[in-house]
Image (cartoon, rainbow, N blue to C red; front, side, top):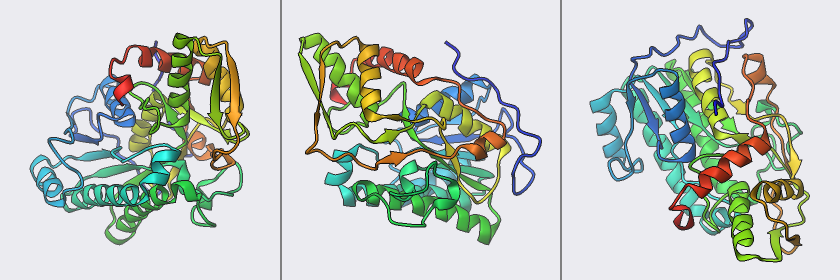
Length: 334
């Protein structure tokens, strides 16, 4: 099923400088290519005919090791970098490992961005997260609301690390004239997601829980909170399409939001996942558990003004994700 199409840039593209598209033969390093986002970027690059994609597994290159990263960039000299590597997790993981999330994300992103600059990388794209925006930001959240009030405490460490990465890109652009851009996706889902029962995000966690409940014949499934928070979800192959689109069509210090501009309650999401999975039991709510941020809808007018829109509707994307879950033999261990 074809999920993406080429996009044509808007004639009034809001770029800071003329943008030179990547040549099909350009050397392109995708950091984090085994993750959900990185693997989608590799698929999209290949789909669009890019032939010189550089990847390294964690065993081959530890991005937290500055010397190893410096040596890699000095040897490979990638012309373009998609920085999709990160230590990620859901509410439990973020709350239980605050120091780890801050340290590992800051170290790896600073190592990669700095080495890219030192070795003459033509352009770098840094991927962050919508959690960088304030807990009570105006809705939908424009790129300009960054750092205007306090963050959501449950993922503050991760958000601070991501803010540091995008700010470092901005400062390099300002001080040294680099062309490094940042992209802030909403909640992502799709092929190669993490379905771990405790360390995954809400949508893949629901897919696993409802599937297991269906298989076991459980009469009910209990979900966290009260179901009231509103969330936005973007299919990861659509994000990858935007990543390549922005690399070829956007330059500027301000980050670009990546989303659909549509939201639904967690309660509605659970009902939709249950429908797709085929679970017909009762859905209960444990209101002693945290809800997280009450609302997280991105203002996606900037990406739209550049000529890009998403392609995959949520129910279709959940069906594709459930198929991926069923075909992933390692899902129980991840």
